[in-house]
Length: 234
Image (cartoon, rainbow, N blue to C red):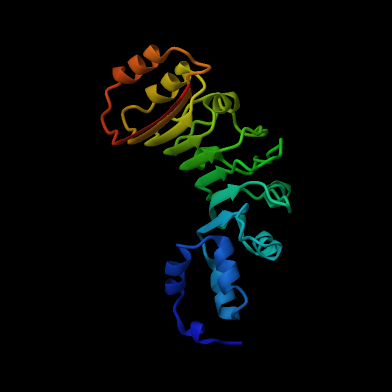
């Protein structure tokens, strides 16, 4: 079956798809015609949001069965009633399919599993990494150098250091809840020369030395910083 949309060039659909998640593309376009189906299956830069409230089981099955993992550049995982994130990562590992082109990875705070199946993800390729959950990271490279990471958002500096031996050294965007003043120094020291946006969360109810914290921040020579957010509690 053909439609009027079949008259439009592939490039037009590529321009539209760049603003949509994989879920939205499949929901809105898949099944209209064979021509559009082929465009969808050949598209190279998918954004997959597994915990999205708009993602149905049917749409996940399409992602699961139709979309090549090496075409996914952004992935968000989290909790849902179908355990889609766990099934998705299990598939990647069981079939030994590496998410070779993944550049952005987000672990939603709703993720409840105590086990992540992450051997298919190369953290050294990531440009952006966000974690809102403190679930464990088995089977990751603890010595990862994060050579390409520029954006890091996290709910716990202690948790990050427990999972990885090295701190990223090329960050331009760092927003983190820090568990100690030493952790603040540990992360900023390696990135102060290129940081443009810094967000510091800190709870003085458990870390009492406010004067030391202020003194530490004042010692840095900020060369490129244009945004500073402070969330100080206690």
